[in-house]
Amino acid sequence: MNFLFSFFGKGGGGAPRLTCVEGRQLQTYTTQLLAGYHNNYIRKFQSVSSLTVVIHPPLLSALLTNSARFSDFTAVRMGLKSFVEVPPESHFPLENLPYGVFRLQSGSEARPAVAIGDHVLDLSIIASAGLFHGPILENSDCFNQPNLNKFLELGRPAWKEARATLQKLLSATEQTLRDNATLREKALVPMDKVQMLLPVSVGDYTDFFSSMHHAKNCGTIFRGPETAINPNWYHLPIAYHGRASSIVISGTNIIRPRGQGHPTGNSPPYFGPSRKLDFELEMAAVVGPGNELGKPVDVNEAADHIFGLVLMNDWSARDIQAWEYLPLGPFLGKNFGTTISPWIVTLDALEPFSCDAPKQNPPPLPYLAEKISKNYDICLEVLIKPAGQEDSHVVTRSNFNHLYWTINQQLAHHTINGCNLRPGDLFGTGTISGPEPESFGCLLELSWNGQKSLPLGGTTRKFLEDGDEVTFTGVCKGNGYNVGFGTCTGKILPSLS
Image 1 (cartoon, rainbow, N blue to C red):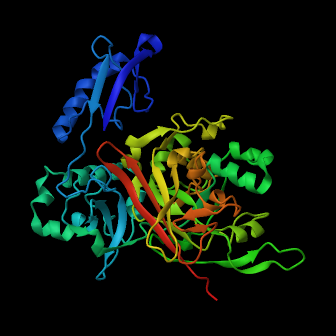
Image 2: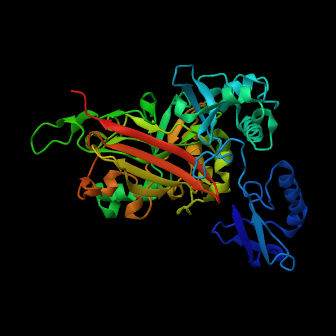
Image 3: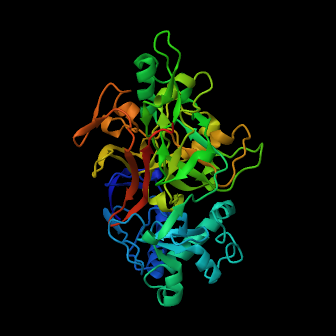
């Protein structure tokens, strides 16, 4: 990752300030802090890997300098190198190491893993070999579990300890696993030989409504532009409680739901298969340590309760939803299926791609006011492969950074009344739409509730038809490497008679 910094003015007290010309606005440190940290950071990075580094964004978020010494300054971060082959376009380099749960296709118990290139690293094998030497994980059985819940419960110190151990173990210069053929063969399994499972046991699932563009579009469709966004939306992250039992792993087929729809004229309500089946482009935060009942989580400590993110498709039956949602909100139009991607990308892996969250106006109430309010630059795409076709077609390009309410604010609001969260709980962001039509995050918006047809390689869609397959992808683009989420896929099957 290359950063070119240039002098652009004086900060408080006469200290120079810098900005990254690639677009990341940097905070300001004093020249004295730079003098104290500069050489230390060079020595640290040169000693632990093959990096040629002066600055690492997760560790030094700002760089101040004396303009006489550094009028222009370049900090270079080379990609981390693993002994495991990582294809150039892989979502899973050494910088990522997302967590999931798998079993061998030949049949075995569920096992925690991290992804590296086109392989999974079996963490139960690594733990049994005694390769977790840190004080938290050395005697823990968290990687001998059928899900990641116990590991999540240990909190950020354990997550950082595991990440440091695994990055070292998989690095090109570390002999322990690289030169032990027997252990390597047991621990590293090709992805095409495994079946991915839900990474956590989900106790509770909450779905938020955090994209201003999505809220505005939906409100305009159903209420008109004058009252598109309700006044309360700008003061709190709106959400509803979803159904955890119908959360499924990527690749699971979704059966078209049946239910009631709006009546026509004086006729009874329609009943039958949904005629307006839709996808919703979302991501979901995975809760780590929970909180005690009655004890809210401070918004500035919320990140310590969030392990990472997954892609999420919160399938929606728009006709069922429109008829049932007053006065209590979504029910059968939403709870028939929610698909998540198998790999949880940690906040530590996402940190180099953090960016400023949108300015909130009016300012949030004090319990939602973050000292540092940030999102992540995650490029998102939705592809549809129409029934009977071989090719998929991109219908949406959006970005996680379009969220108005941050995941930290979502968690803090969720607990402000004393609600207790538990390890493995999920909260979805809500549909992530951008300002342009090509960034709308669902067919409700793309077709403007069926008023327009979406061209798909010789056919068209207003809503999903039986046999259609929907795929989400998400990736952060580094310089020469990716930190990605893989895919989140589901295919629509006909309604049961």
